Image (cartoon, rainbow, N blue to C red; front, top):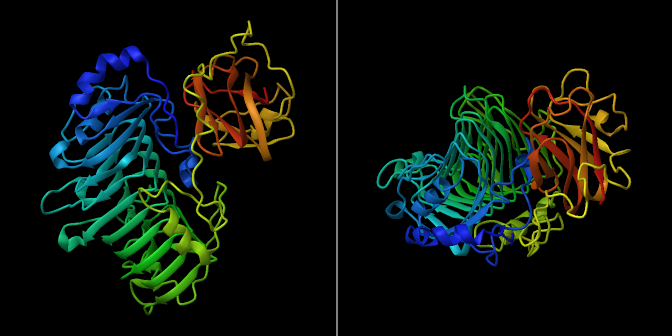
Length: 524
């Protein structure tokens, strides 16, 4: 379990009584928080998904308390980890107002905010007939929760019927080890379990259970809503779902090592120009598990290593284009992140042992055997230690270049979109006359190795004439998505030593177009 950052005692004592009355309790350092390990899949891209890592940790036992925790932050982007225990429902979820939040009474509202983790702890977190609503937000982690029986019609209603719904310019969401379930289809008042609409991108759903619903979920609300995508689904169980497992309208999705059981009408529905990469999944006792259905606007797919166990296929024609009975690839999909596949034959047992809430956050490493998480998070330094971004107190001038070998020389590199005429390799060539620039004022550049290296300091050196352009930044362990350091301005940045294969310098604010001449990395 991840150890929370220590709270300042004075602030804790000043607010504890008020918070406790509303169902939120400030968590002291001894209490465990979110799980070890970081985001996977597409949620690792676009700067990564870390949620509230590094922020204050609070405990909430009501929906109102969750909203109060959001509204009590210094700003809408102040990192926070909200540990949830107990049942969250309409009766204990009310609207809370504040400058750092925008909430509503009938749902958990994550709107116009960033850098938030919601994690179930203790005896578990159940969101009963009440959905989690993400709008105009980024860097959100939802872990180890159950969301059940959320209705779009009937009584009570919440969140348009979605268990978890994302809409309107949402970026970087990781939902992990959660259980999303309904008790019927649209005629009973239920809608989707996991929906993404209106420009939602860089999302991962991992080690989760979706069951007993007419609709598993969708990417894109209509054939014209094609601004969504870059979504990963891995090690999930889809069980007793009529259709939409998921439905893809435009965009790119990657499905690997999922177990699909009793898809009653259709499964992965790639349409309207969507591209699906479908690797090492196990489809069982189901119908039309892959294809383009209910439209004449086709999508495409790349398939590899899947097992089809008692799967039936309908005849093609009109708005019905199943991929089977012998699914073949009709496109290629390039995946920008690393991942390890379990063999499809063991997917049912691996998913059974890992997926869903309250399963101990077990994961798979490709060995076909569920693995327990490390009880400590190696990316989270001891909260009693000094701030890892602080300079070494024994170093009288923290701007001095680090000693030792620059590990970047001879390494690889990549990053986000770059300005014309520049190269990622310019940041690791030892030549201050060459540089990398993003295409605008923000972007990221990474240094990577073929095997893990221990890194404790980096030195960001700006090109001549552009010194002082770099503003706010984050240093990320690209392997896990953990934030190693954050601050403002280029120069030497120190943090607790960490073993990794790829480290990313993300510029989140600048006074102009940054020019990074060198991205140096050091072991100490």
